[in-house]
Image 1 (tube, rainbow, N blue to C red):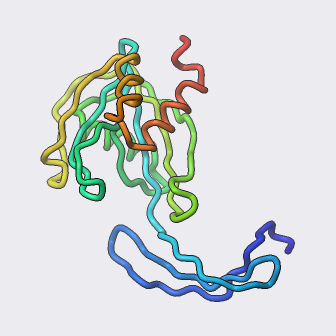
Image 2: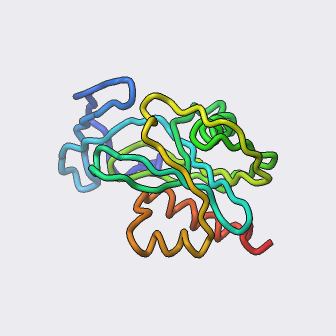
Length: 181
């Protein structure tokens, strides 16, 4: 196979669809010729913003229905490919009220690459100015707070920050060298 794929798609069908996702089921053929089914979600990419100031971060907390508990994370939301930085700016302002004078793209990561097509695009927001939050109706229970870097790491260790995107984004931040300056 010249395209680098080791699994060939035989057929594909949509088994479920709503405005936020499409669930597909593909019939596939593996390199040895055996066939099988692969189900996965097509979901839009999203942005995640790390709002950083005074050697710490602004986090948001809300009830996450799929895991049935409140959880802390960095601000995040869906993003169209053509306006990811603009969406990052919008999510930060909506969820925290903060506006950033400086933006830095830290990278993109696959989100659940075994079950979804979605990517996460991570931005660092600095030189923050406060303003009014304009949360969506679905975010009515959202809270926010600033935590020091040490407290954030302790929250991850204690299981208070369990959002894999936030932990992965923090890893990108550490690797970027932005914490060293």
